[in-house]
Image 1 (cartoon, rainbow, N blue to C red):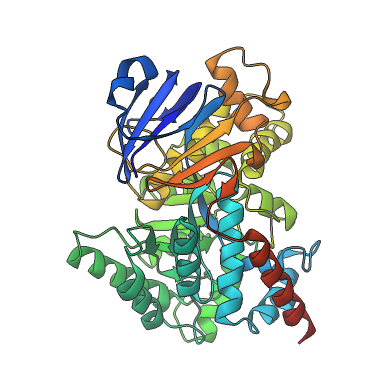
Image 2: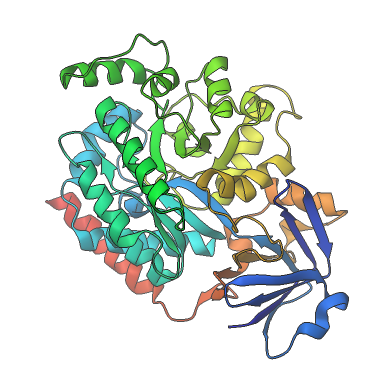
Length: 449
């Protein structure tokens, strides 16, 4: 489908990191790419047989990028809330997950894809059980995404994860990619991490014509993570290096590199942040779930100052409890200003970058997170004719509205890979009601078994 998308203003970062404002924009899309973007007057002559969507009330933005979630955990939204992380995870969530079927995961992921798309997320990176079912749900809904089966020592082995790479990596019109996902340093041994890294390296070198396979893991989420990690490795007969932080542990076992996607990164020293920046590790910040689970918050100011690669994540909808990235965007902007008593500590434009181009950098997915010519056509439009988005006094005021005022339900149209997924907030060919009913039935069964 060839598209022409109109709006009042388009905002995006180009791939040099320059913030671009285009007034009275027109975006020309052919196949899955943005062929041109400029003012309507300059390029309107190129509209020929294109379907036209949008109007002069629309803000045109790159699709948002959710760098870390567990998509199918929509099933557990509202279950076991108001508990510490370890109690929530070990005493409640893990026991429920043992009962999951592949069909449960499919419907949980489908609901997650619907929620994500309706709130403007066009790319998501998920780590969960039955990842092939998450891939199927994402592809069915038209959501771009990464999947991965958690590697847990003695429970899920690395060979199972690499079968996923062989079967699902770069499939569904290149919408789906596969990551290798050791769950966390306290559930996967150093041997599993090292072997994962070596297999990823070998695969990427042999398949240079294919998209990169990344390692996606939780890192420095728990305060006592190093102690848990040491005990877990010793229990499994692994030698443990003499290190003082979990990031230094990753460096010692040789997996701190630019193909690592690390979620949370809360308990870090200054030297840890230097190491993450120097090794170009992609960091997925999850401030809402961090707060909800009673965790400390990441040192975002220092990460920005040291030019770390920063993307945003919602985490799972059982620990957030939403996949609306706009909640994360607003919370990130407000929390640090109050906590550090400094209103300049993080700027709206920096948050916008994390939600778009920063996500592209963290996921190593060229072509997303921007509206540049010859990039992938992942585009959302925001209806600006809303009381909470009025007035618009300048171009920069819209960036402020993005960070502090916009909500997921302001998203009007969603295009992924050049295809219109929602128009006027409606899916053309999917029954949202049926998916919600299926999820309701399945969580009742899981809780009663």
